[in-house]
Length: 194
Image (cartoon, rainbow, N blue to C red):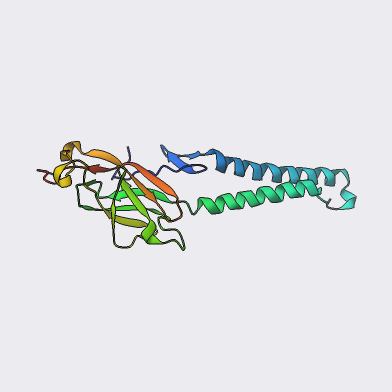
């Protein structure tokens, strides 16, 4: 269990997360990296084999098909790395325990994409739309905890020591969605001895 309320973001498709301190590689990123390395080693091996056979001819020309493969894999590699750096991620909420109408800050990266409209960023708390406070930035968004549906007054019906852990979901103006599972613990506003 993460300490100090720090929760790891769940990222979708081709991302790298940390699992018990070790990086966990997802299929899309690994495939692009492997393809890039494989085609470049193939090109180097081909050039070395041709050079070793006829060193007097100097450095050999790489066959055009192999040069095309290395160029395409390099383009895919660079595109994948560039897009990986612009994904929205969530890292933590502060405070980790809150009640209805209390302000909470969610921290992360790329929460407002470059050139994106901050006002179109959406925050969901346990699937319920939350109201943003102020203007969201790329690193943090402040929101107000929404009321509990079907409860008079909207107070979440959980005591502080049995607060309900809920997911925080942020959808950016670019349509990227980042989820921080079980990040916020909701409780009644009139807690005692906390």
